[in-house]
Length: 237
Image (tube, rainbow, N blue to C red):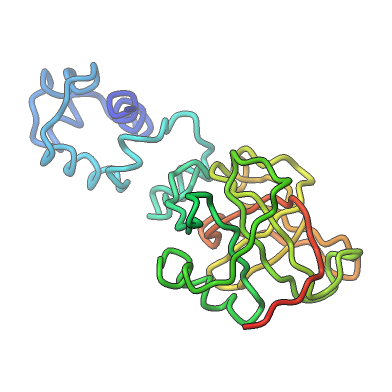
């Protein structure tokens, strides 16, 4: 919990003394000094700090703000702190077999528009075809997506690409092939270069050089799955 460090950092960032800020927030200087030394504030006071500094309570408490870049801070102050560090917990909806093992759901092309909006809906996930790949390690969660286009040759259009779920986007290594689920561009399969810390984005590159690289802001990303394997089987719906 970084509340004490954060309010001290934000106060100094505004060029304010403890006396200045205590007047604005209608606190005594002694009370403010206590908060900056890790005294727990009441919830109403926490809201007051968040509103004054124009950041969410979540950012004020959970992020170490002085470790972020100026760009990241501007994103937070602009209200875009969801996943701003690429570390915030995202709840993943899964299904399990009768034996209690996690299934690998298949997301065909015709279901991908629905997946981008209903990825958290247990009914939607349960409706997807499922299979298993016994050779994959059991300590990861997997999902398989049917890819469109020829941007990732030699993997052909229509192939089924299986990826393992990445919780912390800051851990993505440059040059990693990933399936990226986006809010507005559907599901894309690209080689990823990590710009989360410096630019709040991922750089997406195709293996087919006819397609130009482009950046995708983290605010547009829903899920990232690291490439594990692919195959060309057909399924019926």
